[in-house]
Image (cartoon, rainbow, N blue to C red; front, side, top):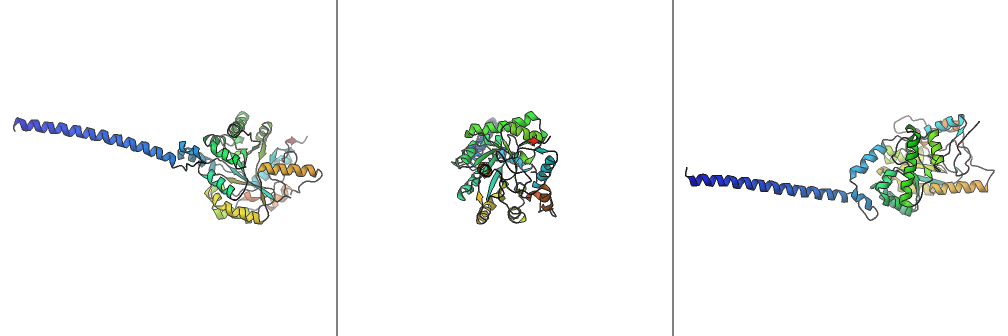
Length: 351
């Protein structure tokens, strides 16, 4: 083979190798650029809006992992709370807690736990504004830190903010110092963002004991539970949630309704629920408004108080679940003694 031809073949091989190297580098550069664009796009895909500017910096996985954990927390049923309350009374213990308002008044309080949620909270706020409903949000401290503008929006719309701990942990499994931290840290976060210190506190899952109640009182917060829980956190279906609230055990005056900030089925039901309760003559109030009303009623009628059923009567009337679609969470009234002070039972022990 001629020498010139061998040289040409060698040169061609070098050219091909160089071209392949250039193409590989260029492709890698384009791929890196594409990854950057996709990352930037992921931030804007999280429902960014003028009302929700915090979301842009938070990938979806950040709050989805938290929400999955929050949904796994099993709420204490109303039946369980009644039984626990009876046990406290049997021991002569009256813990500082609010389970419902004045049963003689035609009002109810909607409460929403576990937010703020970057996807659901803006939708919930829009619904509440559209139907002119004021509610109470029990917020998780670390979520409020991630989405402060949503907390500010809740306050701006006239809603009440309550403390739902900083990390959403079961407080009955923590040491006194950690319980104190969970409540105090959430209060500090809310105060830093809104300028207001919450005086309402709801333990995650309704899990409380004597220690939790005493620490709550020492920190000047009112421990708030609920009278109605349709179990929306388990997403049983809109019709199931509706039946549990409106027909299985209908809502009564002074009801504190537990719902969650992060459930599509709840959002779908709310317009119908608001309309139905309004037709029944109910007014919607925040827990602050409910407590103020209870205090005013107590001040103007010092010798009178709402009539409450005894625990044994309530337990006897409580529905017994006979299928997976029925739960004992729907018992309406609590066995509390007549309200006093801030609308709660004071923390005393009989001697």
